[in-house]
Length: 344
Image (tube, rainbow, N blue to C red; front, top):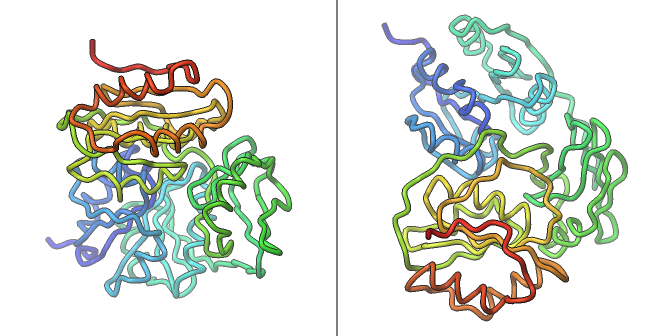
């Protein structure tokens, strides 16, 4: 018997739905025609799962907005409330949305969503069906990041700008600057890095809070000993665009960037040379491929030392191990090694 949902496209957001086994169960129950994955760390979890999916680095609203077939969003929020809020935000950017929130076992039919599809999914999964209206009030130059847990990191365009002190963080852009209005203990260096990349249009910026993934990374087999060295400077979310088949290693600049690059590259067996200064926010479970080395700057910022390495060292290496050894000689007396996974 053909499933009544066999013609749908399932769009999965975030790694948690894969790590918790939700995606595999929903594929078995719904038999979707296609499964698309939205987000960087979701892609890592999806690839580790081995499920038949297609990965994209686009946001869920962009992916869903481009689909002309029947479609639904799958998400597992860090709490049921944050999951509901996420669905409301996505729904506010679309004409209608069917949203499967696995953290609470709920199928939301937002706004003018496909009620027949929502009912079919609720019946097949046994989830509760809730019809809801999104209420995304938009103010020019102001952005609310809702569903935060006090104490967790807050991101704008992949850069940590501070720590949440309330459930809602309010940001405002004015006079060519970005400031925290409320709910945030700001990280000045994070704002500097964000503005250095160009003042974001805050209403359209990618904003989130909390860990980017709570599960530990997978481990892959190392394939290349020499080749190109990719440079990722405080923008870990751009990594997938940089690691082609010719890459033998990654130079990562920044504590959180190094953690994200190490986590993702562990899956591919690609070693990382990380330059940090000790201001990380613990946004992802640590993990590194064999051959990885992380150094902490003894005086100054990781930005300056990392850019110096990128400028003075050849980014084509016959041997990753030799490149690391020479780089450590160049930095002698200015850094200390905090992680060393080079093979004996």
